[in-house]
Image (cartoon, rainbow, N blue to C red; front, side, top):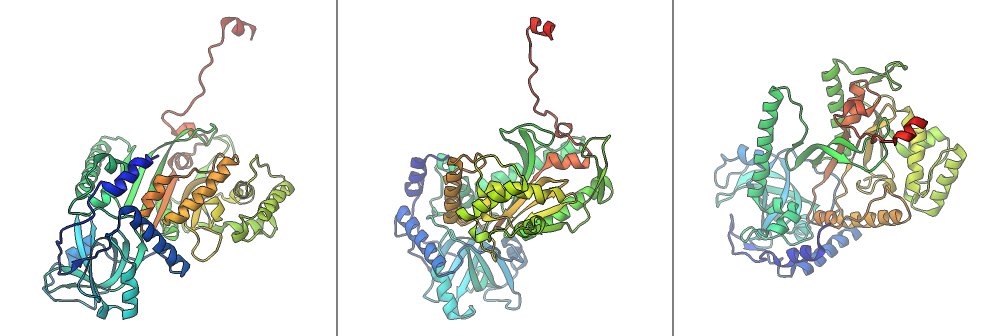
Length: 511
């Protein structure tokens, strides 16, 4: 957990808040940072809250992009001064690092990424309407992540730009960014706030890119020698990691305290995108490894009954609450009412009626989990997505965009076992903090699986996380299916083992 005193100091005094004027196109620096960092944060947070009260979504679920900064700059660098291509309609996204005005109806924004900079020219006469232009400009500040619709052009001062016809706020930055001129240099603060370090310092980004290239070279070298990959970290907008996790839990045929997972985060994607990616990944993997989409698995060991598992896409998709009603024959509480005491009592009685065991605390989330395990997971032999979990079960997932009380989450089950969990990431820091507080109450009530408040994570979100989808898969369980192993120890180099007891000689003789 971050030291609050040091974080506060870093937010208020470790970097300059004013900057000499150096711009690509004429214009003056916006005086939006005339406040101190703490006051700025309060003002910005209040602004976001007012947008929500007006039912304007400051954290949209999805923004479609059809190009990147790198592609845009490479493709249209040939344009001459004042040349424009209004027929080339493009959409891209990025973070604002500078904002300048040249009158009330002309603004310039600098987007940065991968060591490159692209200027956004927002001119009222090119927008869909002047009213939309004014409303949009009033929302945007340095650090915000935005989506831009527009076309390429080069200004009369020679700056290659995307000429905006519409700009969408995707994730507001609630904190004052350091200025590029003075930088973000305090070493300890950089390490504690690595996300801000990567936002501000291109040389740091290059270090991680170089590190990735080194690992790639090493991996290729070892692969050619017959080695197997153990750990990989890649990209920034699309980041993945293969690594070992540890949980202090019991050991059985499908659980080990130390296990291996692959996780990735994909900016500007949602859980629907990830369901499609998961199908492509797993079906392709199974076909590559086994030669077909169908495998034979012996859940009770080599001498037991064989079961065929079919990975042919598309995989079956079931909505959790609707499926529970179907298989139990009971009318479930409305998703938006699941946090009420009445809903908890109903689910408690239903578990008793169906003979389902649930140890204390018998919270709504735990009762739902037991019902799903008893009535839905048991039918998931072929790959099956269980999706749209109630929010009360998904503290890190984003709320469902059209079904109140649900979240945009799915779990993939094979042979009754979960192998994959994914969701549209919750990137609203205020809502995330509220859900963490609810989780901490459940933890205080005895729910050991509930989460604690992660203030450092919330602070990271306050700098602006773009619309993002996150995904994780258990590699050990996947390896079990593809090697027809019914015990996780078969696919681990060093599985956890109970210690050998050294009994006294006299006890051995008695036994």
